[in-house]
Image (cartoon, rainbow, N blue to C red):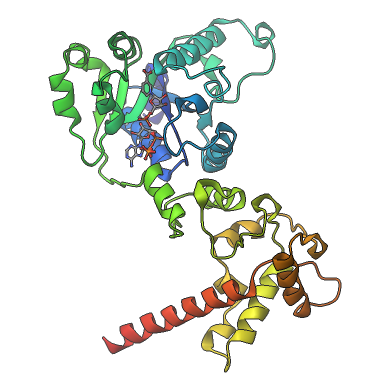
Length: 368
Ligand SMILES: Nc1ncnc2c1ncn2[C@@H]1O[C@H](COP(=O)(O)OP(=O)(O)OP(=O)(O)O)[C@@H](O)[C@H]1O
Ligand SMILES: O=C(O)c1ccc[n+]([C@@H]2O[C@H](COP(=O)([O-])O)[C@@H](O)[C@H]2O)c1
């Protein structure tokens, strides 16, 4: 019986999804869209989903908050590390100018068609692009590439002068749309009110997201800019990348203005120094002192633990403020130890505030 089901699955028409957007930065919801869409098509046994493609828009799209494409590509790559089937396409960003979504779909569709129909690897000139789904040549039937989007993108079709009608028609007629519901949008009504969309309604799949999450790139940028936490709103690796590069004017509790973000290399000694600085500031010692290193780490450090330790030599201090901070740190570490430059005030201050807040919380809970 299960062999029969497998065989039936193999006969289902094949589809792939392409999501366009800014991805500045990529959020978990950008990736959730793909999972929701794949479940929908595979669980209803309508299609075999062969792959997902993320295509970040060109720099010249110029939307507010759009980080440079090199950074957006790097962040999407990091976010995709845990996915086995969603891939990043850099074709759009490497184009000389902004490309309309219709052409983006056409390019990727044509590439897949040619690939599937060419007899073997020898026909392919050069290496295969990273976005190409695996095992496409297992079968010879065509792959339909559908535009995957949130309902807000669908509704942007109505913004005067933004999308060309003939593009909308081409996308819906020749590729198809997969729309994930989003708070504040009414895609059913939107489709009803559009003649083109109603005409091709059979090519539009509306999927209700039963576990909505209203995280958006703009919301994340706003929080970062205010120095507020975005932990659990972004992949840890993406957050670490933002911290290191200082994208979105991020204000970090540990990064001083005098430290160049790209010089921020962390190591064990850095953790030790924070710990030393904190325990010096706390007198008498508190219960928190018994906590392991793990408890003192912020989100940056969990990532860093997975990386090979790198050393930031304290001799590199380049300003009087930095030199003063370095000296302070040096006093608290052994001779010859390399340390991360941080301001003592900020490290002590933040840890103290955090531990006071923790205690307050515990006290509140105990009073209940
Ligand atoms: N929370 C969400 N739920 C459903 N779809 C989403 C969500 N966040 C983003 N999307 C979709 O992801 C795609 C990529 O869009 P984009 O990068 O412009 O995302 P965004 O987070 O909405 O950005 P911004 O907040 O800067 O407008 C779009 O189709 C958008 O509708
Ligand atoms: O093709 C078009 O005419 C078109 C018009 C407006 C926006 N887009 C694409 O839609 C994506 C999301 O844009 P936005 O402004 O809703 O974040 C982005 O990838 C744009 O290139 C595409």
